[in-house]
Length: 138
Image 1 (cartoon, one colour):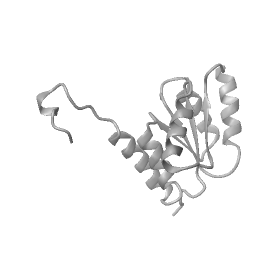
Image 2 (tube, rainbow, N blue to C red; image 1 turned 180 degrees about the vertical axis):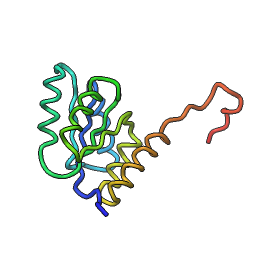
Image 3 (cartoon, rainbow, N blue to C red; image 1 turned 90 degrees about the vertical axis):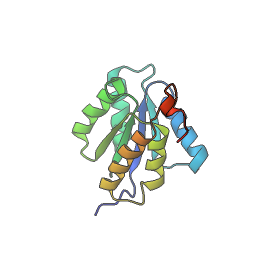
């Protein structure tokens, strides 16, 4: 059973979204070593790909958190995954998904971590209101 111990995280997002997600997560959980962010702001696709390759250097598994799977960041991560077999691309990053990763990355097997990220990310999305049936808080 391969544990997630040592798994790194890279938030690859548009603008400063990744920086703010990481800053917010660290305000909740404290400093997070082995996690960084890359922004596509002001970078060509090739420049972002080069920076991502640099971030992926080293041993061990890495989770790439992407804001839009179909955007430039998602495309660059999908291409990078072909050259880096120990990469998991988690698309549609949100704060619940990131917190789940940070809290469990050193505690659970990689296969369980993947399932937890997917589940927690989906659970973090909800809409309440407009319909009479939705008026009650859950």
